[in-house]
Image (cartoon, rainbow, N blue to C red; front, side):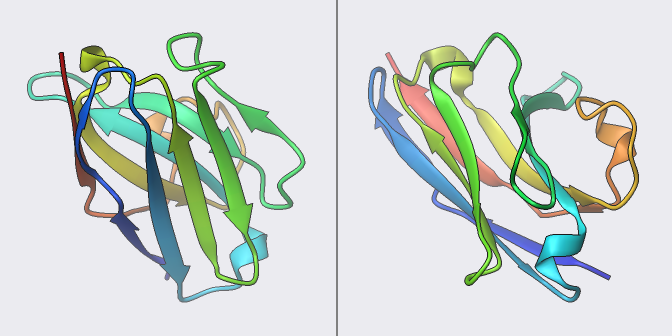
Length: 124
């Protein structure tokens, strides 16, 4: 089992920045890939960022590329999502996810463990 706890969400003005954290526990941190997804009411969970278990490859959708950065700190068993130049359309609940298997990194059902989420609200 892997337990994931997100933090760092909040209210920010458009153009501002936030850094989300996801603390992982339960299994060796370097054995699973990590990702961030987001979700708004009535919509499917949307892929935001991905990082491999050894941190050598990252992926982003076009909607956040160049503004968001995912990273992981092995000494702290934590994954971060640095979000810059935030837009109102970035408003959502952000979820951290972990997986052992492969497949499409942007598909939410390819992930084995999820946190409870943290709310990010961007005002215009």
